Image (cartoon, rainbow, N blue to C red; front, side, top):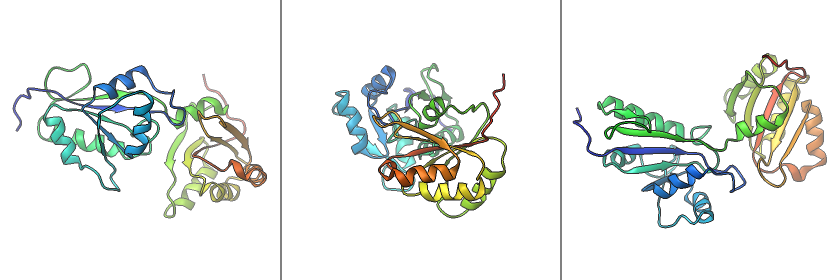
Length: 253
């Protein structure tokens, strides 16, 4: 069992811009300045943000459960030493369809298992602090401009490439609640074709290039969206947020 800890290690989970680099909070910038180590998906992407806000001489390390980089044990060791670690994703809030959620889960599990006190940001001067530095998210950004009432919805993240994919489309087609998921430009046409097959009469809303110059929302039946992209192939770029709903979604008070 661990004895009383002299210094508090801190893990700050920091939201970063999804497109426009101006979309970052003062608190996020302050946190990146004060952090001893910044954990990234891709150091090249994170460096663009740091350069934009003149944050220099920072130790950057990669963490991704599917690629090389520091392991959980190393991050745990840093926190045990009282080091301040900031976790960022390539875009948006860590933990939303990216490896950040796994890291936070493993860190929380470890410190609870070894009898450390896991604290919120207002905790005592012992234990390990895990704090949220909220920021941009493609999910909430898309919802805010979609014009679709989403008081109750199912979020699917990125759909699987193969296994279970058709089952999900059948669920989307028969479900009563709206479904929201992310899609890449390489699979958006196949996704729309599946929606045309399994959800032909539902409303499909596509939000693309969020927070960028060419931000756009397109909605209609899947067949109509397919026709739109067939005529505007140059618009099949960037990440897509897809919302599938009934055409008359009631607004509940």
